[in-house]
Amino acid sequence: MRRVICPLLFSYIILFSVMACDTAVKSQGSGARPEQNPKAAIRYDSIKAKDHGADDYGMKKYIFAFLMRGPNRNLDSAEAATLQIAHLKNIQRMTADGKLVLAGPFLDMGEIRGIYIFNVKNMDEAEKLTNTDPAIQAGSLSMELRPWYGPAALMDLDDIHKTLAKLGITEETED
Image (tube, rainbow, N blue to C red; front, side, top):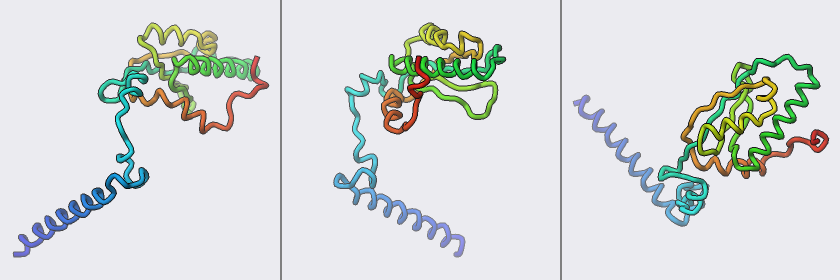
């Protein structure tokens, strides 16, 4: 008898838990605040999806770039600082042009120094942009490009970032 009661009791506990969750979700209904039920505020936006180049899954193709340690790493600190500023300005230019969606360094000092995600149509266009990077031109970095399928929402990343960053490249570092 004990073998029958335990699975039966377990089944009732699961059933009541599911019913309680369903009731809680229904009670949030359309009058719920978004922080109570985040999905209540989410609506498909066909105009934004088209503007971002999204497919039916809200995804799109990008070119992902690994910035690798280049062969020319023997720069003195002044040259390295000047090259880094030029590298960052190039990143800002590509971002302002809508060609670069994301850029950032890795913090572990390994062979892969950072990443770029390009919003371009093909590898050739990404390679041309890669070759505009002063750090690539100087041989301080090299780049490996790969096609990547990711969220079209990344297209909003720079606008969001601007609302969060207190600091950037300072005026004294500009040409």
